[in-house]
Length: 168
Picture (spheres, rainbow, N blue to C red):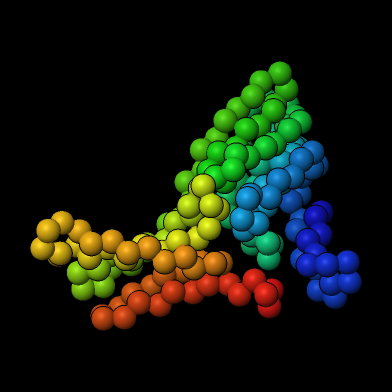
């Protein structure tokens, strides 16, 4: 089990039951994904017991995102790069590398494409507005939006949802 708290006196910590024997944990650079690595008892095709290595990914609120099964007996190390898009896993005597494909936030309204991304050199959320029907090529404007979470569009309007870090 893992307990995630906002501070020492958090009255409502998040409890995560992975059902694994944990060996490592790692937050991504933006603090939006927690990777928990460990092993669990399983059975092979013959019905014999064996240990299965996994990395489970969770949000800070305890919602399970994905599970990555890893060959080997024990994950002894996990590390990520500065962009948050790559993981390195130390498993037994090997090092495995994993590329992370995040869910991209975007929408299209009239002739404008709106999408969000993280500038790796500044580690800031950015929203790009691209006018696709501009006369001399595409016009582009970028706006920094701290804590970007979602972008949705309908008709002539777009909704951009961001987390206010000061109140969190």
